[in-house]
Amino acid sequence: MSNELHIRTPLIESLSLGQSWGKRVFLKMENMQPTGSFKIRGIGLLCQTGKAQGVRRLVSSSGGNAGYAAAYAGRKLNIPTTVFVPSTTSVELVRQIEAQGSEVRIVGDVWDETHEAALRFSQEMEALYVSPFDHPLIWQGHSTIVDEIIQEIGQPDAIVLSVGGGGLLCGVLQGLQRHNLSTTSVIAVETEGTASLAASLKAGELVTLDKITGVAKTLGAKTVARQAFEWSRQHPVQSVVVSDAEAISACLKFADDLKCLVEPACGASLSIAYQHHEVLESARRIVIIVCGGIGTSLEMLQTWRNSLEAAA
Ligand SMILES: *Cc1c(COP(=O)(O)O)cnc(C)c1O
View 1 (tube, rainbow, N blue to C red):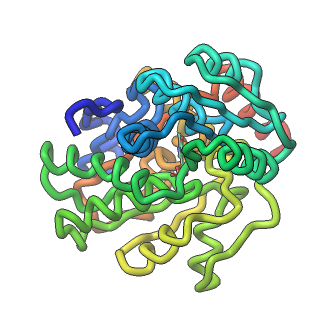
View 2 (view 1 turned 45 degrees about the horizontal axis):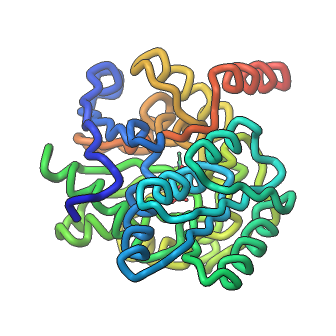
């Protein structure tokens, strides 16, 4: 689609990360999307397709990067948009979503309640419900990341990415499949408090976590999309779980190295390059998807680091 809402992001080789690891490391800078994360790729395609089919309202249920992407899409496509957010959403994020022209409704203390309310409202309004991760058009939109990578560097040996609900994972797997790249391994990273894919792969069935803990709330889907679980068993996907401290430390190092601020959800993937070299021993050319995120300030990262250090 020529009038897509996302941009083609830079793929930057990091010599410092590569040298310390003895590999070539390429960073796919999705933090530079107009919405600060890759989410606009899939959500943009879903909303555009909806508009072409006559959709008159968008409804999102995310107080994070997905809600912000839906708000951005609504403004660009000129479709009234309502974003339901849980009460835990920061004032700053609510303000940013409203600044895109969306109506914000604060409902529920946990995301499941917010999601229920958003779903009901979208049915009443005959609106398009914009899931944060669970829709084939979202995966198709995210899969364009792989097209761009391949156009620039050909086939990588491995792609490192973070997993929340698994939309990004599905998109990357779909892209690899389309290019017949069944030998590129995918490293699917979660934090300890959000490891719903790891739990499902271990159990051999889709598992729902009791609760989400830790700082990487963006990765906090209690259950991953069924497709993410099933496709992970058909492709070489390695599930890795890192600590909050590692994710936070990677964000702070990355800020110094690349002069970019990203969420712990993204730091989880970056921590593979900073402190989990054992994960990818034989791979030589590695792409890390810098998924981004707008929900974290430098001050938050420093506060988290200090409180984890105090507790250690
Ligand atoms: C949404 C998001 C993720 C997780 O993506 P899923 O598609 O839910 O797996 C990771 N990082 C950031 C910054 C995100 O916005």
